[in-house]
Image (tube, rainbow, N blue to C red; front, side):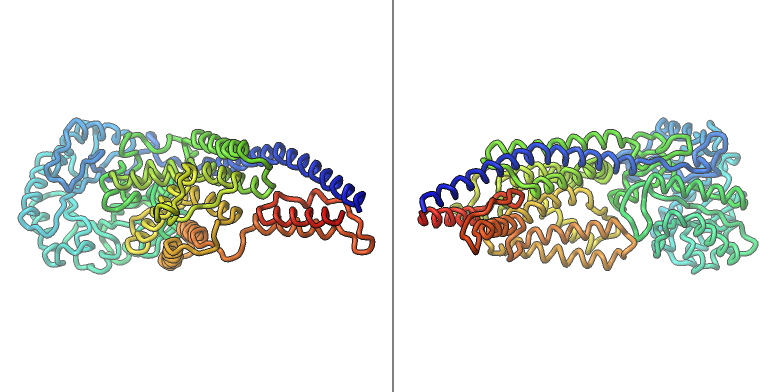
Length: 615
């Protein structure tokens, strides 16, 4: 019996040596291979995202100027809702000098806020003006603005080629049809130039009698904002079809498309995706159709209007051909356009984050006596790759979708959480720590976690959860203008979910706070899917992340993967050690021996004790 025990201990020691050698090999080769794979995937995805799209016709071309373009001079935080703001003549002159290089005409919407200077300044650079008068409920103000506009028409007869009295008044419901018609007739009787009224094409079909009082019909067609949004690939054909329908409805009247365009940034509406490529494609196609079929088009609009983001979200301020802050053209005078002009910087930041995530995991190993298994390194690689791809997207969304202190705070915290989560989770994964509960962070003093890594991990989870709930409720109750936070939430949620899956919590009890948040996120995700439809991939992605975060907050009753796989492997090894016929020990299959958890260690210790007693 003594020789039997000696042989047993020898073979166990030999198995431990082989296991250690295997773990050292895994510890060096596995993370290196996964890191290289992560970098390859990140680079490949960004090269694909930044692929330029070649167009047959360049929309901004100094050789062939556009017919006309909508113009508003407001920059930075200037807004037409503040009647006290008077835009300087120098600011307007700089814009008109730039616009004169790409078009021969501009359309304005008002004569307030310094816009009464436009005809004079336009005459100096050779631009014609479709002079707009903004009218609404205030009749006295309407009278004053019309008087100012009539003076400009008389003073600059060679510059002002037409007057557009009112824009989307019927859509906003600010005047009755009879009052609007009376206002148009009073203006038309006092000028010698054509007079029109502008509104969405559906309202022209609804109030057809207005056509009797105008010289030409001005319609707005914005495929993105249609009740049934149109994809960018089909938008030009859709606009032409609507134009033909209006032409048939008003025979003998010229039809001017007074607003047509596509946004470069903002949320999707069903299959309609705002992007640089889609804007360029749409404008190129609609201008090409206009030249071939000989109809007039006024593009909406010349410059982005940042002030609209406060009322209409990111998409409301992103319709310009020129950037609203830099006043530079959004895409070069060429035929190749990319959605990510700064993709190399975004790629570099993603690669750096991937390195940092693997570095945080390796740093945690210095405090761990044994090497982790393959599944842990795969989890680290998933977090590093996903976050490395999305960091550039998230940073760009933070920059362009933040307006005001509240937006910058929420978007900035989400970006910070997206960067911190993979670093903290990879460290926790290698250290054997599970996600702390909210009760452990903010509950009774005796039950709180006090270590700094756990406080940082729990704080990041809490911040991510609060932002997720706030954005989810916004998308449920006030979705029209809100952006989908798919990139930022994914960066934070994926590392948390892998950590929850692999590192078992200390208790199987489901915390109440987490359960409430999980249920709320799940309900919101389903409602968002119903509201947005299945064509909106931003909505599908965001809803999926809400559900993933919900499952992360809702701890499963069964033990996670990392806890039961090692247990099964140890039990399997024990069975193989005892030969049922001879009672002799068989060699251990090292490939099956993973890192044991506490329960597996106790089982192994118990088996050794039993065999030792057998001596």
